[in-house]
Image 1 (cartoon, rainbow, N blue to C red):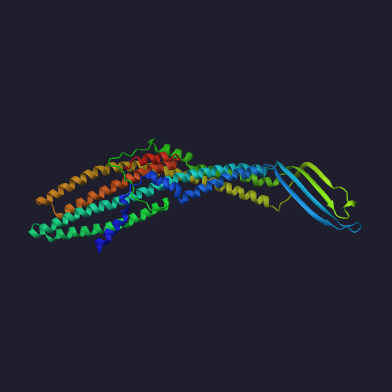
Image 2 (cartoon, rainbow, N blue to C red; image 1 turned 45 degrees about the vertical axis):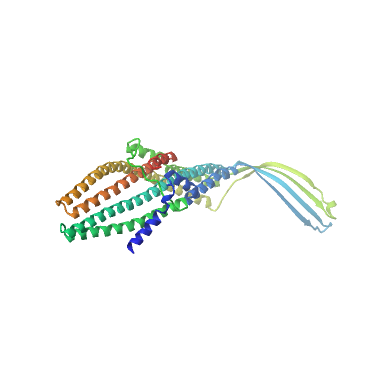
Length: 432
């Protein structure tokens, strides 16, 4: 029953092996089309671009048509009808609130562009993270299965040696215990792989097939420049989150000026052409019908608004202070993200180098323990421990490579320089 369960899980996990493996760039292009989070950001960007046009509309003329039809019944003359229609144009000459709203609209459009650029970078990071999480889960299964096969050979050897009297039953029990543990780890690994594949499914909108793994013997590039202060400086100035927060602060400043305009006068140019027609039995006694043209300047001076404008000004000042603190928090967070990613890359590269050496040493230790077991100077538990150490080292080495690559992408994202070309370079590290 246990073997059939493992077999079914393996079959489900690797059903797509007969299909050509997809690489990282292909998965990214699918995410561009199907990721709901990215689609939402794209729609938000399109909506934000309209704010500039909406602000501009407050500075442009407004043209409108109006009309009325009225029945009039005077006491001394017969009733008559008045049919009036007019077209009017109003051009703002001075409206400080509308001027500030236009400037705010341009800033909002720029902020939406910065937010969309951040979403593009986030998509690159999310796709790469989900992709390498799947590869890491597959590696765990591969190493566990290889370890299980090696333990099975050691178990068979222990049974043979026990039968001929050259080993104790303890060797058999130890090997059997390690084999059962490997089976349990394999089942857990298959479940984790399914979780990671579902996470990638959520991004690309379909069940992922087989993925191209890393090539053997790859070299992961170090950050350029190799100075943490330089990357922190980039993050504090170029990070799209920081840029968006700077724009938000400027929008808040403009808002103070806009609401203060509630105390200022407004001046409009007004032009109108109207016509009134009188009909009915009494219309002959009414004069003044025909077209009327008028043009002039209309001004309005606010005198008292129930303290509402003053309250809005205080609110806008408080919100400006909030935006200023939000900017500082965002700048510090970007700097911290750059530091963490830089240290993650550098330490990851050092780990990769150390684990590559440890893999060679672990293989030599396993070979020596196997030889010692055959000649009787080593016991079975020594071989099993050496096997476990080797496969654990290989698993850690693969994970260290993925982490180093991901921290490199996160570092560029924190600095605001991550582009699709960076994903293309990472894609070149995969088997094709």
